[in-house]
Length: 88
Image 1 (cartoon, rainbow, N blue to C red):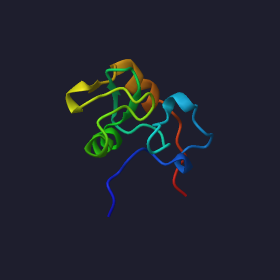
Image 2 (image 1 turned 120 degrees about the vertical axis):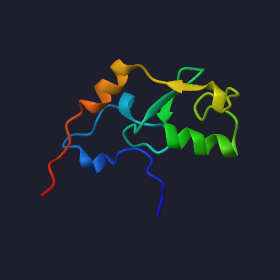
Image 3 (image 1 turned 90 degrees about the horizontal axis):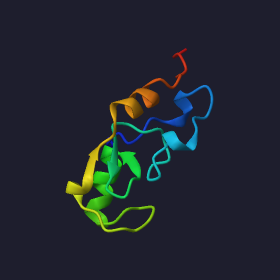
Image 4 (image 1 turned 135 degrees about the vertical axis):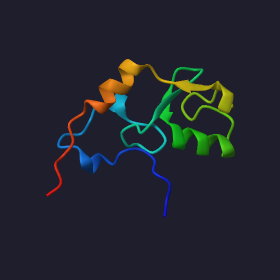
């Protein structure tokens, strides 16, 4: 049983814009957090990434777990407002 990363793109009727997707798992952010360099990731994705490489996956700036912070409430609301498919 794997650890949940982002929300699978198959859950959405239309593909969400890239700014709502984690660069590590390429799915829609689940519990998004931001690195000190400004890039945003799923909390689980960046936590696991940092155990292997203490750097930002996108710009390679050095980061550690203490450099990760919560995103704004407004950004979380934007992600949560994305439409999802109803189960059949």
